[in-house]
Length: 195
Image (cartoon, rainbow, N blue to C red):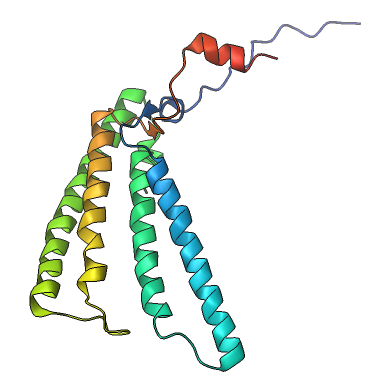
């Protein structure tokens, strides 16, 4: 029997640099995670209650559509904050995740700066809308509550996303991990994954 010629060893693919190098966040990401769970649960309960009422009475709650739309907007903003902190916001991966690690980090910092700028502008403009709602006594179209009950959350959540983007820039483009997950040394990680 003949032996096959020695072949070159197969190179082991290296993991994406941004994926394994998370940095603990000062503000726990669990805040956004729990808010997402709570808002989703509220949306499900409101929708389920409205379906039951419509099925048994041929009428519906007047407030459900207005509150559901508000909760969906808040959900998008809260999830956007978590996505920015974890460096998972929308981007063109062909450009953002290719090339050397230094280039990837520079693009991540640039993207975070643009996100921070956008949401700073959104915070200012939505604060003006909030002021108008308070000043002119605007009420919501569906149930007639003060409109500022809804609009006050837009500048607050815009500032939260802006701060998460600034945190991403300060971490050098490295995604955040929850602060409760303390980083471990390579030796400890090797012991945890040993057979």
